Image 1 (spheres, rainbow, N blue to C red):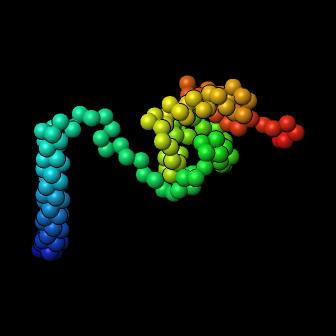
Image 2 (cartoon, one colour; image 1 turned 120 degrees about the vertical axis):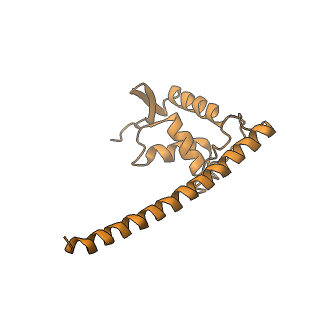
Length: 144
């Protein structure tokens, strides 16, 4: 039985260390929670907390579409291997991620309108997948 004494002491020490580590993690989580709660209270006092999309800021990863027209950028997106078929939401996200510049107050609306017109003009085709309309470039005559 004495042989187990050293093993048990080592195990007890390991659990003690684990408890200390978890207590530190808990203290840090409590500190962060208190900070976030304080920010929420400040935003509520300022009347800003209920605003839609307060924290929805798109991350711009490149300026690839910064100097392109919307149609050029849409073509580029739909030519890529990853987006042979893409929804308006995906196109919107790609435009924002790649630095598309617009003076429009409602870029999403403009994208939907442009896609509708391009489809009507025969430049795009569409299909529904799981209830979501997706767009692709129309095949040109004589190309595969």
